[in-house]
Amino acid sequence: MLKTPSLKGLMEAISDKYDVPFDKIGKIFKKCKKGILVNMDDNIVKHYSNEDTFQLQIEEVGGSYKLTLTEI
Image 1 (cartoon, rainbow, N blue to C red):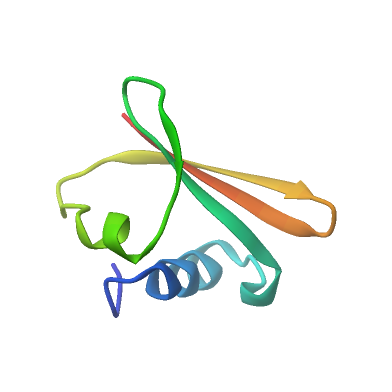
Image 2 (image 1 turned 120 degrees about the vertical axis):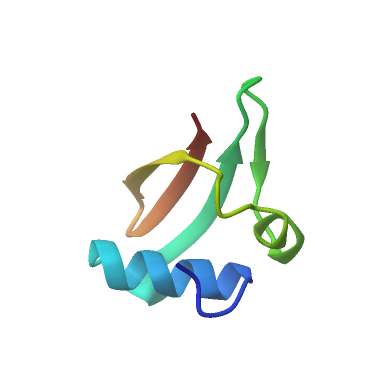
């Protein structure tokens, strides 16, 4: 659940729930069912629905974390 429907709100929620340091979160990507990978921004986060289901992948890359949300 996001406090604010924004990229920052998503980062805060992931940081709180999965114990990922907020200041070490780098890029957040969304991968749709067709396999298209896009860099997330506020507009993409706002268009997520409460019913959308995705898998979260967290990778450490060069001291920061790359997050990928894959629709399932």
